Length: 306
Image (tube, rainbow, N blue to C red; front, side):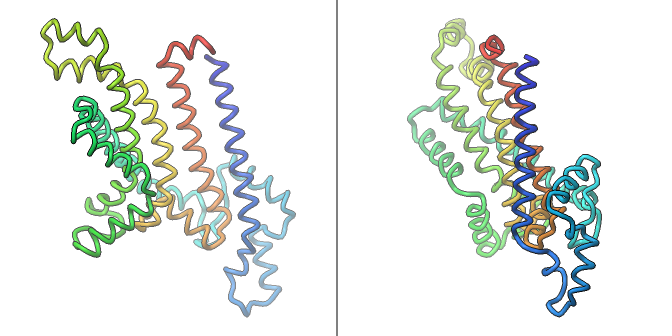
């Protein structure tokens, strides 16, 4: 078990290092932020002074190692655009991102699992086909397309919900639905498939023969055995939600980490871009590591092969 954990952990570290290296290379290839920060009529001496103050006059290899050093020291410097410590910017926006992500994950679970159960119990019925059609649509439609469609319908058309912002309960409805649509569809489809594998097992027929109510058979006995693969996919969907928050926050002007990172990319704010992508990469990598560990803990066959 320990060897399995070490192997997955080392893979996670290599993945994070690779992502950080790619971000460093691509940000430097995007252009000189000094040209964006200063007016066109700025003198070359002014530009040189700003580059020196930002550390952009140093060789690229030195900037590369300094970026790693700053990250491990938990001091990513100041934002080029906001002129504030990068860490403070992310702390301020973490609440908005966490609240949206938790809301989306909760909605995906409490809606996706019951839909999957109903579809499995009523297999090949209209309810089953309708539910799975919605699940396929939710799984295939991109977040930004769904978000824009909802804005057109509920904000511009019906004028029921605000198109963006953060604060009231109404502000949460469309971003949460948009972010939860894909994970909800995946959870519903896997729950249905897993329940179908369990519903006709002998131990359930035995429970029915003893006079146990059908509702109890489904919810207590069948669901308990069907939830193992569902639990693992829930962990995987956490990574989907973390990554998808970047797009959803941008569409709905949600003041979270995702929107901050996208804004930094537009303004060539290198420290903010690197820190934002690193946080997202670490969160997704840790989630995937926990999912891998859950496979080993929940499935004895995996433990035996470790």
